[in-house]
Image (cartoon, one colour):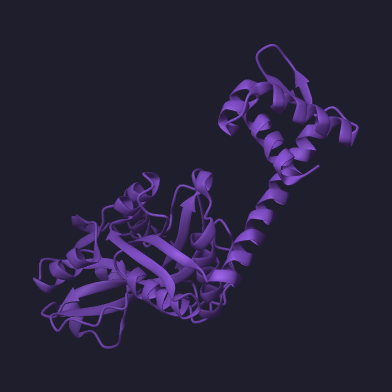
Amino acid sequence: MDFRTLQYFVTAAREQNFTRAAEKLGMSQPPLSNQIKALEEDLGVQLFVRGKRRVQLTEAGELLLRRAGQILALCDKTREEIEIMGNGLSGRITLGMVEGRAPYMAARWIAGFRKKFPRVRFDLWNGSGDDVLDQLARGLVDIAVIAAPYDREHLAGVTIANDYWTAMIPREHPLAARPGNEIPLRELAGWPLAVPSRPSRRAAIERWFADIGCEPAIVCTLSNYVDAVALAEQNACISIFPQTSFTGNEHVVSKIITEPAKFAQYVLVWNKEQSPAGIVRTFADYVKEAAREENPAPETETGQPTGEQVPGRTHGAELL
């Protein structure tokens, strides 16, 4: 049993048809059938139940398919690591990001990653969460940073940061003069509000107010951070948006929403059917390690909160 034979077996198992598998492998069907038969003789078991139009895996075949996937993935990873050691990692990564805090996080990752792999180049793409997910689905970006929630049926991801939700208040607004950098959610009730346009976001914000017996006066929805700042700057309304590394605006006062505090969750995501490979996977692993160092709170590969408290949160804070 060698790596090539395993690849033949995996392709046949996934196609469930030797003829289609042979076409995909760029070979004729008889040699493929002979290779599979030789593999069965080598292992002493039957791997396929052969039918007229399709083949099905036996119980032994199911086990070998699981193991073969692991073996081939480890082989590919080992090959890449050896190439990196010999030549140095190189190539180009296209990274999609939501606006706001994500570009600042990405800038730190890129700076650190390029210290280790100076031959790697990056293409950055920014937009709303929906725009970024569309680019990812179309294969126009390799990997993306978005704010949760996301489609876990088609995407895999890992939590990389949690961010306070804030109220961006016009400098002239009465609430801007409130002392401190926090504001209870109840005090925002009744004032005209702008909120993110993603349905899940708006629904969550409406639930915040419902939980305290209020109804938000939403007069505008928006898709990016620039809109949120502009609306507050022009005294059009108060914008509710995740806290960011924005350098500040003399016409806007930003206050963290409390009682209870709310958190937006940033996740690094990729298509399940096209898991990161090569330099993209190396970058994803680097980001996950960097996120663990910057945010020591427990996390899962699905991006689902573990329920454990994140250091620095106030009592009663909730993830969104």
